[in-house]
Image 1 (cartoon, helix red, strand yellow):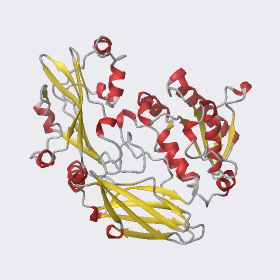
Image 2 (cartoon, rainbow, N blue to C red):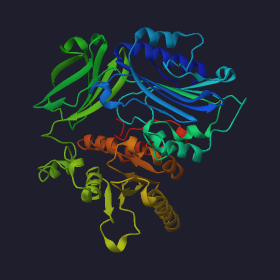
Image 3 (spheres, helix red, strand yellow):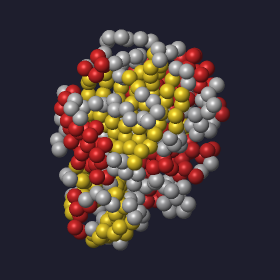
Image 4 (cartoon, rainbow, N blue to C red):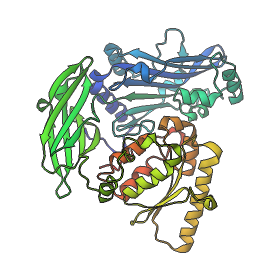
Length: 481
């Protein structure tokens, strides 16, 4: 399907529903999250998220911890239920479509009637900012922008005190929002302006065990047992170090399929002479699901990495990257950037240069990445503020010196997962700082054999600047394609 760059609200809703129905056979569970506040004797819903989930790698109960928190004025619920196809069809086919369904057995929440008459839909066909990576996680955001009956939410200090004294205590409202993965901007909206977010996970994946060896590409893909695997196909872009790029398609019948309990696994091997690196695209019913880069470990299209591997016997730029002591994180990032043909200058280890950023990385095309590295809380000790100030000084010096640097971008590298940095997203958004987290660093490592251009790196890093007030965008630091 061709996605238009700018969709009207109703078209956005229809396109999301069509895609959700197309992928529905792959779903195994539903995750529901809600936040409500008390007005009088009733609970009024402020935020609702529903995720139709394919837990391709793990049991859902290992990924999501159900929880209910009720105080005098706040009610937060996260629950996991088995996927019910009839319930799914009922939700999507309801006329009119209700983006705020409530089926909790104990609690009843209210949506003012006037809020349901002024709904605005926004469809993100690729992924949300919470789920960076190469695999699709489409979303439909629904805002009820009613101007009637607008009221203030309970005071934050009141909510903090209630949560501090809860039987399962939280350090305050922000702690609860982060735990339930609810955006901080929710508390700024107020009664009668609820927001709903619907998410669908892609129904299949290419396994990381796929590989290139001895001129053969071996692919392994996995999907739920009830999904029609005959609708899956793979496209490949294969790099040999010589033009042109080889492009091939492998339909499902070429795969050898086996059942693995609730999963099906497909394996195929294609002989491709001189294959060094391949970008594997997975499709279902002609819809792109995502992609994975694989490479022949004995070859390289990157001469810097080829020679680096002579000395990297323990695979530091690879599987052991995140197992190093935190003392070496900054040096490892600097080395990784150099392998991407950037020229990096490292200041962090020199005591008399503590006012400098940890790393400055330059490209020959006029990009400058101003980098701080941290292995602890990203927002600790004013790190983002300091990075913003240093970057501002560098911009002023570049302007005054007439230096031909086209793009200057502040970046914070951390081995933390992106979800663990949620508390700092608003601050990073204010300063325009790109957060490069565990998942994004792993994407970079996967691309080191066939590095993206500095412009691709820059564009992908810009996309990793958190969106203000939970505005959404594609976040995927692997250089595109």
